[in-house]
Length: 416
Image (tube, rainbow, N blue to C red):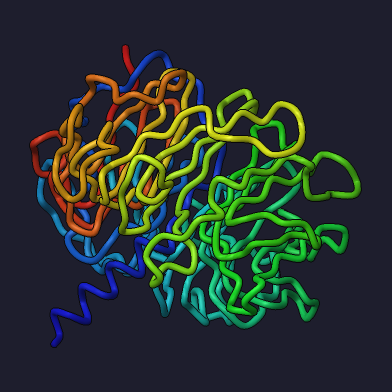
């Protein structure tokens, strides 16, 4: 029974993870060979990663990490940081009394931390705080007041921090599933309210949110089917550049269909292209078929208004995709999939399927799987993909990447 509870905990941690920033421009497809120096997370799940300068902050439900070269162990409960380029585990060990579910880079060397905690460094901070990324000290000026419910995803661009999850209020003000706060003070932005809702009156859940690099557009995915009174099935795009943010006239009905009934939403990841002109979505769903959007990755162009069909769809054949990260040369997807290019398969390889366990790279133009195939042990799956100038950071609940041991986190370096 203890093992069952542990597996359920890992699954929840991965489900809560979501991308926080828009795609990066990188020189070509990243290497299939991970660097040797990333630390090893020894238990639990890596649920979130943020990069602040040369510091990588990692969050989840783990309790211990180890230096990759020496094997020296460090107790790090729910959060730790290491130096990009060397893997040196930083001394910072902030005290949290619950797991971390989401991270985002903050202003002036800070990192926003969300999770199932009530205290940070001995100070009451329910579910959301800002910490110094290097020292772990609480940033006192950020005092956002969360409402009842979980925060599942964060995205910070410019002066704003976007917060998504299952809450129904924020700072004592009604906000269903999605809110925007001042990135310095944490004060709620009264102008931002997309009024997400579900026709069946079930709980609204925002699973992942992304913001374009220029801050002009936001995309959110999750359990909802309307925004500001307009039909928006599991995916909403909002115009966020002006003083009055609003739901975009762009929409798609591609996700109006159902997958397995146990999923109130089957969308799990979303990311913008570096130039903001299109986005990619990753989905679970437990069903397969050449006409279904379950267990797939898809690209949508954002030009124009009205209903948009996907430019392409790549189906796994009934295995989950949790995460997506877009660069100019690839759409990286992670999950516990076995195959890509597999529309006719169901838990097995159909005609044309290619073996891509746990992680894959798709052609941004055609959607076909690229030859790139580092492989990743499947487990619950790769729940976190984060691009940075150093390459692609990969977070999961397992310990094999590129056919070598990498405990729950690894870096596939940028070309050159």
